[in-house]
Length: 430
Image (cartoon, rainbow, N blue to C red; front, side, top):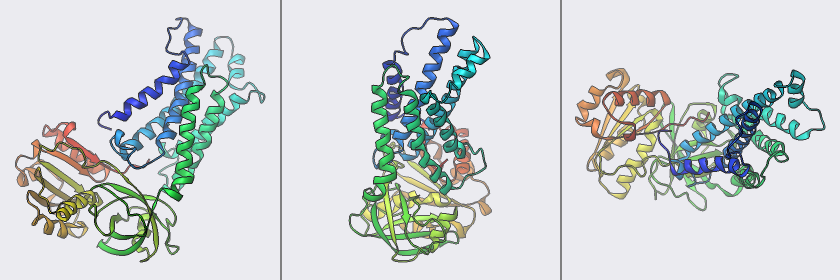
């Protein structure tokens, strides 16, 4: 998350409104008990607000991600709000206990565990327990989680939200913010879990599977009804329904679109990175799939005056394939000039490279260079300079694994390239 977007100011406002409505922004009396009481209330209000905002951001509607810089940046905010909710809830519990410790240990225990008749307190404990269960995979408390298990656990997030509202409702000094945020969070949850799988997806069938590398294929999908309208380099959630799949049948996974807008078929590049994506390599032709999206703002709205350098590593070359195919499909030149560096370990792992070289010959101001680690070593500034002498003055777009993104950013920073000219997209689900 490199910069603030319009959506961040909306989130900040949403965090402040419950505090303002409850009178928690008014001056306080600077005495120990009053300060602890104020901190207890503020931490509780912020914890619930973060929970509700995280729930609202889970709605995942096409185009709603744009004010946040794309769906991947929206994911990051969703994750940050969830983590903040958990930490603030723990702080809230400690402050409740601290308020009682000023009198006695028994008073602190009673505040935390007042008995079964105090149902708002029980609901608060329930919300905290469920929140820990939901977020444990994110913090990797129990090792690296599987995608499917992580998705199933997130169904419980709705219960955490409900218990949090039940806890706060009778204790809050103003309830209308909880009405507003609670209704929005509930609507987002219902859309995500119940309505979107039924009315928010596009129906397609697998028209073909092209093997690109030993571990990567491209699915060619034929629309059945309303086709998806997308921009170059966006991505979709794809749900396969082939009963013969070894894994992932009926599960949604994000994949980058490889086709140009307006093509007859929707094409997505899929690399075997897990059980689900590995199984998709063998999906049956003519089997049904559903597609949801499009999402993302990668390659959109950038500085159109500077030459661009695209760096795609592994399956991360796919959004650039979509952009190159778009230039070819529309018969346009690259304006401003573009230099695409494709990064791969070996030649046989360089998916799409032959097509990219062929299309580059027909597109003015587009150059394509292949960097192979086994031949060229790690990517270096000298390699970039050899193929693009003034590379440090360009606008950079990076897509690939997180380790590649971090490495390339470090390389560019060392050459004086500021963060404002470095844009990246990487799928970090947890």
